[in-house]
Amino acid sequence: MPQEQTLILFKPDAIQRRLIGALLSRIENKGYKIAGLKMLQVTPELARKHYEEHVEKPFYPHLESFITSAPVVALVVEGPDAISVMRTMMGSTNGREANPGTIRGDYGTSRQMNLIHGSDGPEAAKREIPIYFQDNELCEYSLSLAASLMAAD
Ligand code: GDP
Ligand code: MG
Image (cartoon, rainbow, N blue to C red; front, side):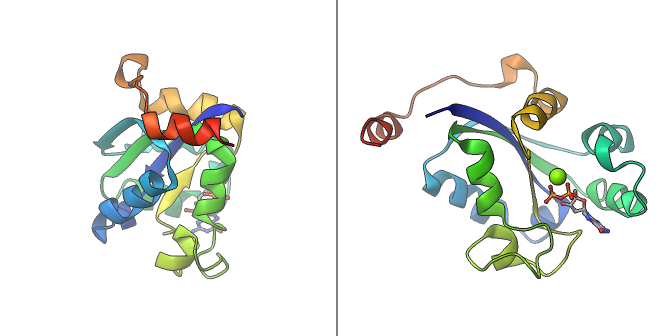
């Protein structure tokens, strides 16, 4: 099973709605490890770097205003198939289309203010993690229960 790291953001709407604890609990309850965690204010420059693929799209100015409107919480989440499993846990981009049981499906009705970002593949994770975290800001440690769960897979 590939041990993967993925870049997760709790977006400004999650912070405004006091959902940091609720969202973090979902990730911890799933069994994933938090390898890095910080709160920061996204600047327009950082937003353009992160959302490189969307900068030319008509909705980008709205997305930039939104993502810079309040702090975000950035995390590196680690574990087996963390990238795709976190995407499944997040649900579809549009909260109105996201399945119940997913974060976006349970907490929102907006396509833009959809609470959470997660890298959409290994290449994206490799590009996005260093945008938010230096190597020495990521912690290596073991979760003993996670190790025994994986041994039983
Ligand atoms: P994601 O990978 O599911 O987050 O979705 P995308 O990569 O397609 O888009 C990045 C982010 O831009 C989304 O999470 C939304 O916050 C926002 N977004 C996507 N599509 C639209 C749109 O059509 N309009 C607006 N206003 N925001 C959008
Ligand atoms: Mg995306």
